[in-house]
Image (tube, rainbow, N blue to C red; front, side, top):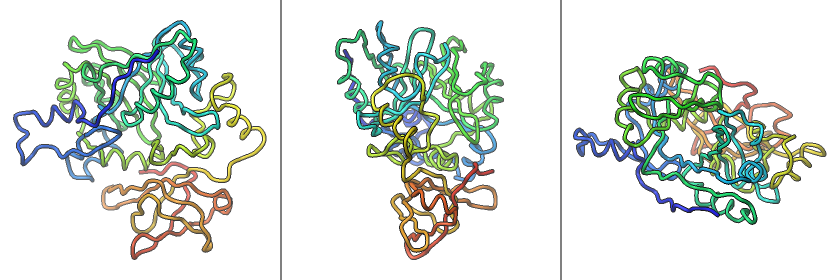
Length: 370
C-alpha cells in the first residue's frame, strides 16, 4: 500500500525561513519563483556573480522542492527493480542511480533518483512529479509486500552545494565528503544527523545535504561562512542547461522514448525485466530512434523553448530550454533541443529565428569549457 501526502505549491523551508528573518523587510525580502513545484528564491546577487560561483567557485542553493520516499517491505528491491530503468539490486550499500519511469509502451512518465542505505531504499522525487509518480507506483503494488512512505517535508529539507570548490567548503565546515559521484554518507555535525549526497554533474561537483529542519538555519549560515555564495533558481537553471542535464517536463516529455533523450546513464541493459523494458531493448537491438536530445551553443539571440531549428531550410528540430550565462566579459548562450537524426549526421550549424533576429546553433559533441 502507499501512504499519500498531497503536494501543494508552497515556499520551500529555506524560502519560508528567509522571508521570516528579521532582516526580510518588504524592500529586501527575496523574490520567489515557482521551481519544480515549490516557491524558491529567484536570486540573491548579480547574475554574473552567481554564475561565477557555480562555474568557478562554490554556490549554496535551495533544494527544498525534493521529496523523499522510503520503500519498505520484503519485496521492495524486487518490486522497485521492475518499476525503474536503472539498477536497484546491484547498487552499492551507499550508492544511488538516476532512473526513468516508463509505462508499458516505453514512454517516459517521470524521473527520480534511487538511493540505497544498506538494505533500505529511498526515492528522491521532484515535488511537481510527486503525485503523478506515486499514483503510478500505487497502481502496480498488487500482491507485493511493499509500502511507500513519504518522509514528512515539514521535518527535513535539502540544501545544495555546487561548484568545483564545493569540497573545500565542506572540508572547512568539518564535513567528510563522499568522493565518488552517486554515493552518499551520513555525518554527525553539530548534533545534527546530515545526509551528504555526491550527486551527478558534468562541469562541477554537485552535493546535496539533507538536514533535519532544526538544522537548516545553522547549515545555511555555515555554508556562507565557509565560502559558498548563495545563488537562486535562475542561475541554477542556466547552469543546468550549460551542463547539458535535462529536466523532466521541460526537455523530457511523456511522449518521449528513453533513447531519444540520449541519457544512457539512466538505463541498465542487463538488470532484468521492468515496465517498458521490451521497447527499450527492441530499440537497442533492432533499430534506432529518429531524433535525440542534444546540447547546443547559440550564436545569436536567446531562443525560447519551442523555437524551431532549421537545416537547409527544412525543419531540423526544436529547442526545449535555453539560457544565458554571463561569464566575465562575455555572455554565452546554451540550449537543449530535440534534433532530428538527419541533421545530426550532417553536423552543420542549424539556424533559428527569435523575434526579429536570427542566429545559428552548433551541436556540441563535447562539454563546453566555461
